[in-house]
Length: 143
Image (tube, rainbow, N blue to C red; front, top):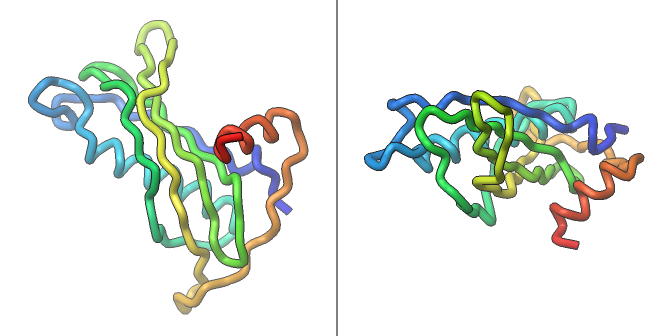
């Protein structure tokens, strides 16, 4: 059975002018696209199968990510059903020189595992074996 920490995925995107809006901050649509992608990667790692995204909920934008910054995106699975997988996804503004980061956005991505025929498949049980995993799960659940 996969553990919560084994589902953690992280990626970075440089915010170029093509990903910026009129006020030279990351375009929200690009951030949402990247967040959905990293959430799907985490869900597939957990499920051991392809997944399809069925929802992106509770999207919050806390602060803009300026053009020239790095968007660090991470995701981890914190809940699973019979074929559904729920991942917490966060986006950070990461300073390209110091590596310091601030939470900029977060959301919940819900996916369903599917087989080659497109039908849903059963996912494994999620286990949480470490204090770090427990803290991440509690944070995602709002506890």
